[in-house]
Amino acid sequence: MGSNEQSPDSTAVFIEELGLHLSKQDGVDPELANIISTHLLQVAPAQDVVSLTKAAIVKLAAQRAASPKDNAHG
Image (tube, rainbow, N blue to C red; front, top):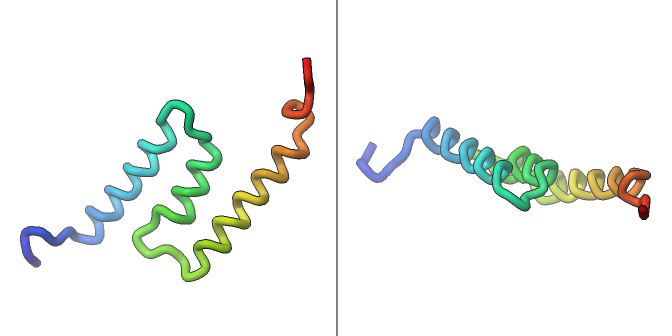
């Protein structure tokens, strides 16, 4: 292995730390960051990663739309 190549373990660690860093940023939606980390930030994402990510985002949006606290005006 050359000096510029990374082992799969170091790549996985980098991606995991990137996801953690993203979720801790101010103004970042933690649930959306979790979806990104779970589906997109993977060493070997699923072949249908786009449809899985879209489904997770649509599910989250539906849950939020149904939440009475988000619709309350006070």
